[in-house]
Length: 272
Image (tube, rainbow, N blue to C red):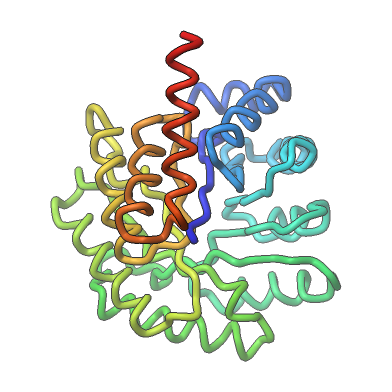
């Protein structure tokens, strides 16, 4: 079954960054509750643009998410931040992104593996350090294999590795969607026991009516086996696509999710 991660709390968005800088935790709570209500199991936090205020913000935001019944995925380019997040999280937590950089990986693992009882999943960004040119499916497969081997040698369980095939915008290259799907397919064939994750919102960056691309692309990614889906769950058409796709490919047992979704929407229309 897939896991849905809501991604509206991202400091790359100027409006969200402004709310984060103001430490507007009432806004954060409203966003969290709305995303959970619309199907998100995890809430992604990206406060990297806050710089020195990143950790003070995350300390409160993580508490809010867990207090609302959600789980946390924190993305940061600062390894110390990821280590601190693992310390303060009470429940299962996902941290990333970690490129194939052995120094960073070792530093992270040396700190987090001593925290007994913590259920920590690591987003392994399948991208060669310093190389932004060669991201063919075959190259990505080699990096993913090295990544998995090293993490397992360091004691990380397969179930705690989330491979991110790295999605790039269509605006940069019209083949980026196809490259991602081909890479994802190779990952699922070669590493069937390792989960995959991707931020599907990236594909439509810079384009108008982004929901059109996201709502169709999510169906293709699910069919190829994507496990953890990061997107804007507040966009109704995307959730409709997820539920309908799972039903069509036989992953919605007895069509429970589809029928429940239809009933909920019928009731909402009546109330409206």
